[in-house]
Amino acid sequence: MLLAALALLCPQAEAAPAAPAASPQRPNIIYIMADDLGWGDLSVQGQAKFKTPRLDQMAAEGLRFTSHYSGSTVCAPSRAVLMTGKHTGHVAVRGNREYKPLGQFPLPAGEVTVAELLKSAGYETAVIGKWGMGPPGTEGAPLQQGFDHSFGYNCQRNAHFFYRDFLFRDDEQIEIDPKQWTHELLTEDALSWLDARDEENPFFLYLPYTIPHASIEAPQELIDPFVGRWGEEKPFPGRHYSAQPTPHAAFAAMVTQLDADVGKVLDLLREKGLAENTLVIFTSDNGPHQEGGADPKFFDSNGPYRGIKRDLYEGGIRVPFLAWWPGTVQPGVTDHASAFWDFLPTACELAGALIPTGLDGISYAPALLGKPQRAHDFLYWEFHERGAAQAVRMGKWKAVRTQLRKNPDAPLELYDLEADPGETNNLAADHPEVVARLLKVMHNQHRPDENWKFPTDPQPQD
Image (cartoon, rainbow, N blue to C red):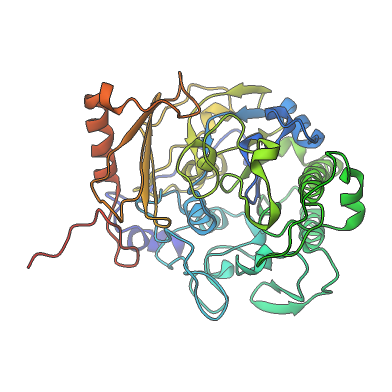
């Protein structure tokens, strides 16, 4: 049915979807996404306050992308970009808009997701963690978007807290122990689902974890080893988010437990003999946050980059990215500039699934397989909150413009990422020809959408 409907689901397509040549083997695919983990929160990328040994090991055994970008600088649009292969100028979810009574703006049925495409190719599919693209009963719910199984938080705002009295299993709200740290439940469900898989049927597990975002809270036995490590702490009093007497210790506990649980997934794959036929990706949905007592400056969570979550500077959108596939992905490091919208064509190419036309993504399967990799002409973002902003990366050049609601013709800032990765020296006045080229990309890549008004949209004529 999906094949027959793709022409309707992809009205921008110019031709029927093409089936790529399958990779040497159809791998299982696991996509693990942390929530608000910064580029610099991995010790392999410079984190000095605590260690992430399992992620470091994953990096040593796999391919580490140093120039990988999230779909957006906040949660919902970043996830929608990941699922659809379209950047924020084209995707149907472009912001964190609430949807009553409990959830976010639904991903429309007309958007074809990577889960639908892999399911159509014979994959078993599951999402375990934080969804945020439509509550049960809407067209955006996970079971309506290609997943056979879902467990966790449907509403991303509810996922800001880790001691709750309910979660969702498929479309059903289920009661849970409010004293149970929900991150543990997500890991348990993921391991259980994986343990039930076998070599006969390929699978796709999307594991969008909820930590270390928002409330900085974890079981005290995980926090205690870090208490006092950095001297006396300033308690977080609990404005909106949960109170935390030792926020630095709690944050370190959350990330180190995340690290340990990624290790559990890799260990299980080895135990079941599935490691050599499974691609595991680890990344984060955007840059680090500072709500709830989080302190990205203390931890250098954004590494050498400017900005944090809600910024389109590098620190808000450049994220960790590790790819692990023993025996197939060779250990190494690449600076290939890639982004969330590349995942759908990558997964479909590796699975031998149909790839719709009209995508913004480019498969990074060649980079994974050690083959010549096509580069993007540009990467584009738009952000609809905090006054509205746009950004473009083209080769070494990065353009940003902000506060578009105040001034739709706001001046463009221009940075040379090779010479100035921290985006401190605005070169716009020195390179007007580059400014003109990147401004044209901004104009061309924003497609007006009646659900997401943007300051640069054409204005009605009197």
